[in-house]
Image (cartoon, rainbow, N blue to C red; front, side, top):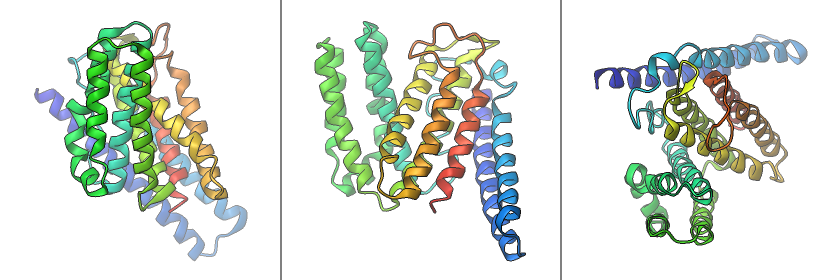
Length: 294
């Protein structure tokens, strides 16, 4: 238990550091403009700061899996989200993606005939996360999400046909999309939430492996599900009529697709060189891309 809490503290400090570096990057860019740097010189300055942030993030996944992987079932569950001060709206969007990612991974497993695993993942949003989003959803008039999640979970537990469960998932997804469309921060908040969700995916992925071997399949499946939601949401935002939003979303989508090279579907079969640093690096790049919309 002590080691688990220490790991959570370390991850919280990393997230604070990442945010501080990002703030420093933005401040440095402003200082460069104030100092008279412009055009190519200013672009070079910004690029060097971005590279520093990405390199710092990529270093997080190197050499840590051996010390953290396989420390117990659910060890990585939800770690990373809310570990440090995050804008409440971005936290809500991240939590919604967290729940959807669980449900999506569960649905895909359920469709494959992995019923027990599928049921467990589909039930996680209610068990692990809904209490954290209940108040803001009630305020927004979307308390109906809880009932939708419960009905989907009950259908899976009852062994209903996969098509029926998928239809319930689609209904839940429609509610999530409605909630996202009502957020005040718009695309900027949504993309920042996708960056944070990707960081959580990296944490989960890291816990899933030890010594190059998968030791916690459920954490891997969570990570895969989260990344699928990042891709889906980024793809939708990339269709925006706002050129800046579309470009930022396309960048985020590209980073997510690059990170997927260390995955192998929802089961993870055949992964020979697991590397969480690829996912951490993608999250840092996403954060930079999203930050340019602020």
